[in-house]
View 1 (tube, helix red, strand yellow):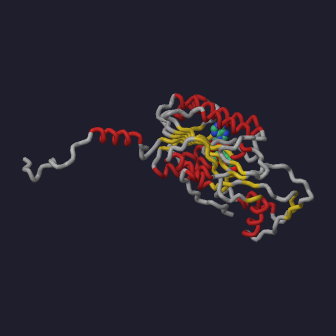
View 2 (spheres, protein in one colour):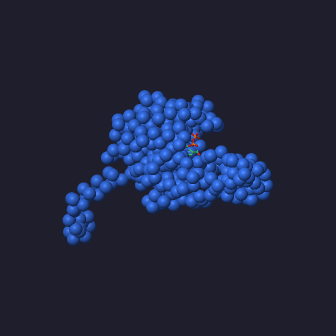
View 3 (tube, helix red, strand yellow):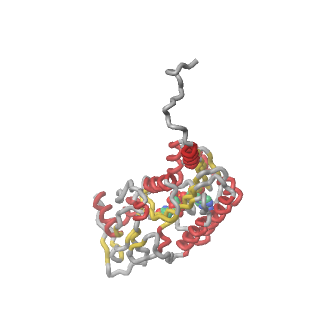
Length: 313
Ligand SMILES: NC(=O)c1ccc[n+]([C@@H]2O[C@H](COP(=O)([O-])OP(=O)(O)OC[C@H]3O[C@@H](n4cnc5c(N)ncnc54)[C@H](OP(=O)(O)O)[C@@H]3O)[C@@H](O)[C@H]2O)c1
């Protein structure tokens, strides 16, 4: 028996406000669960690092690969491996089922640059099947799609941001933009689609030394005045997690703050590693290649802070 002192009911406590309670319960229901089901379509360089990060956080990660050999390796990182290609509608459908978040990080396999047909088979088929699958995936809250700044085309060194018109002057970049437009169709009142347009990816195992070191001591045509935009893999992981936690929707550029020309980048690299400098011969005509400066202001404005604002050599 309770006496008045022991009573668990405090007569002076404020009356229970049912409207307030309902509002709190609604908020809780809407807030993100601690652990999620996440699928990463394309566990290559970026996807497998992302998978390892989210597994470590306790999420249930399903990762995909197209190769049997890589499936075993991936099995050591993720909770579930699916051997598949994005053009297989049925497998995409079952991959998406029950997921809270899907990240698309596909790129054609192989070291060389793939042709337009392979680009279409990789990017367009995957995007179309994902849109179809998302229509029947009530749990799915967000698709995070990795695209490329190459969709802006050549701007001869001018600045671009997410509002700039798109002029992909190569067929492959046109395919990437088409894939963006397709995947955007998955967005609805309760599904967000976030497209991250990445600069050139570098990081552990993809160092700039490996990409440019071989140029040391050479004389190259032109002035080296082309701007290349980079993004470290850590920041790709960071921005994807930021996009997930903040349920970002829409297009965001993802590049670092460096904004250096090839000339400046190679010069710094050679200096850092004590390599003979590259000489530029402006008398020789250089092959016309894309040059643009990509603004990362939109992503910063919503609160993302770059882990590596300048290039790590
Ligand atoms: N590399 C860059 O500098 C750069 C620049 C801008 C944007 N991006 C974009 O950034 C993302 C990540 O790039 P990454 O360097 O991590 O790519 P990656 O290492 O080449 O990995 C690509 C992944 O996609 C898978 N894949 C290939 N064809 C597929 C298909 N038809 N269906 C389903 N999966 C397929 C590959 O399977 P396997 O495991 O069998 O190889 C691999 O897991 C990509 O979306 C890419 O387009 C890259």
